[in-house]
Image 1 (cartoon, helix red, strand yellow):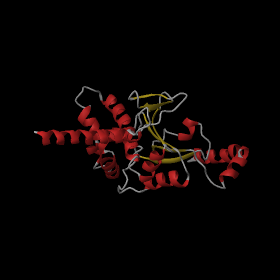
Image 2 (cartoon, one colour):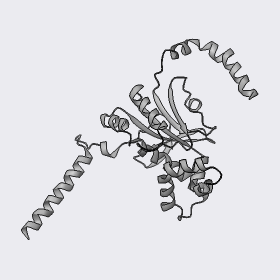
Image 3 (cartoon, one colour):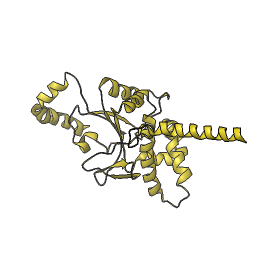
Image 4 (cartoon, one colour):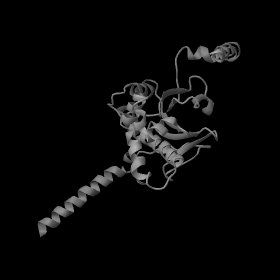
Length: 250
């Protein structure tokens, strides 16, 4: 604790004294631009890696950067999401996983957690099972090493949480309006690099000059501005109608 106390004194004597105007502004309210969802891991500092200032980021942290689906028994994450988007007007949401994630290591052997860390077991089993099942069903028998499986789990978990985000009414509504963007990131601790998911390539690529919001297939349009999902439905209805007509002529 001595280092923490020394840090508090250093903050008061240096940073705070030279940024008093900023903190005076913050005392009147917050206007963050980004909802940043990441892991509780002590090696991850959202303000450090983004070089953001106090008040720039609204942050949710938990074990494994997991977002329970809407209506799940855990309400803390949902309440924070709703407040950030509705009350603060945030238009960009980032889910940021990271390399060497202990939560994902635990998820790959979740049964071993039940005895010694039952709360961690319950959290991962109830809210990260989709990621575990995907990895087990599609990757464990492909000859990947444990380290490679961990990397796959980290990536798939971030993408799964993006899908979970979309189950929230406030997120779905804002996406329909086109007023919110979802971003899937992974932070490499050893490289100091952010990798962003680029849906067109199906890959996480180094983030440099611009971000790659994750598109919603339900909200994509064709070159003429028509909803693709509606065209798909109308196509299915047309096909069904043709089948009915064919049967009527037999």
